[in-house]
Image 1 (cartoon, one colour):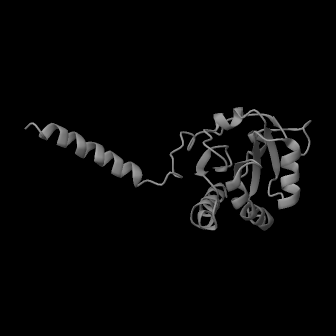
Image 2 (image 1 turned 60 degrees about the vertical axis):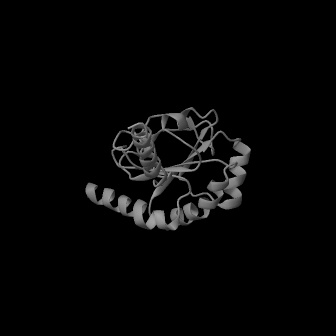
Image 3 (image 1 turned 90 degrees about the vertical axis):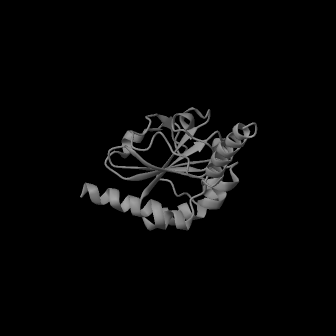
Length: 176
């Protein structure tokens, strides 16, 4: 009996560790999924006198991609986003996070610009409202402005073909 209680405690802790370590850290549940996208109004990178708000995208299924020039993983996913944008399959709105405008503009000039528009979040406040963990993150937003999916980390071709694009097709079919 003397060893029974510590043994039970050890087994319970080991069980929690096993479950926790077997999960994919990129699949952190988001409290935003199924809820309206957080509203904001931020200046755009192309013209700081013009603001972007998510309400401008109502009626469309779109991707919201949080990125920064200092983010190595953003550089990994960027060519895929450029390719997706060139396909005309879906609008992608960028949120440049805690970055310098000149650096962000140069990045898009050098690497291609996949974004319909890019909002600038210099202070990082909007990222917090969206439950941002670290760049890059991509959200699928439906026609009504509801967050349908959150992807943490760089989007891969597999993520696009298995999850994101089928979800986009399904959402677009719902509105037809």
